[in-house]
Structures are given as structure tokens and as C-alpha cells.
Image (cartoon, rainbow, N blue to C red; front, top):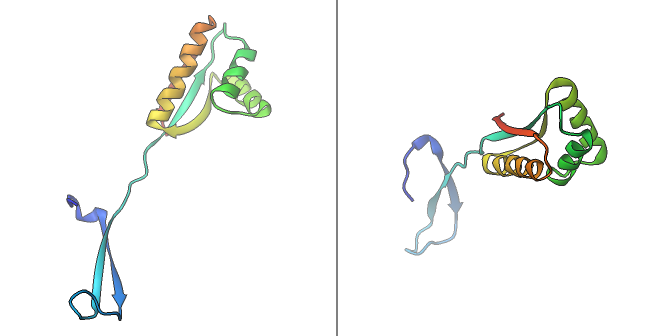
Length: 119
């Protein structure tokens, strides 16, 4: 294991009264590398004058797994405020979901716009 930044490691002593391989007891250490949490991204739907509310609800349920009530709430937020958050994900998942929305909207003839934004 290559250690590049000393701030990223933690050394935990392991105390043992049992004899180790060389016949002596003592302290062993284990080096653990801290894992950074990935950055999260919001997936946003943007309002337009052409996409139907029913289609937006369908997208929220089929791509984002929203219940009917949650989908309705997000759809109304998009309609009233101009945009709404569909979910928060890691970058790759957020990009994939946004692309699925855009492709589905295009297939169905809707100009629905979807973007991602770092949280």
C-alpha cells in the first residue's frame, strides 16, 4: 500500500498477550486508510411550457422510483418554481438518470430538460 498523505491514515494498535510468530508478545499495528465519501449531485427537472404534468409524474415514478404523492409534489414544485429536485446521487448515477430522462423525453416528443448540480 502506497501512502501519499499522512492525514489520510489512522494507526490502530492491537494489543495481544499471546505469543506472535517470533515467540514474543507485544503490540501490533494496523494501518487503515480513510475512505472519503463521494460528492453528491442533485438531479433537477426544469419547467417548460410543453411537457405535460402527466409525463413529468411518469418520469419521476419510472426513473426515480417516486410514489404517486411524491411525484406529484416534485412536479408541482417544478411547475410553480421553475425546477425541482428529483433525487440526490453520486455523480455517475446522477448523470445516468439525467440522461435517461432526456432520452425518454425525446422519444416521447417532449422538450423536458434535466440537469445535475453538485449539492
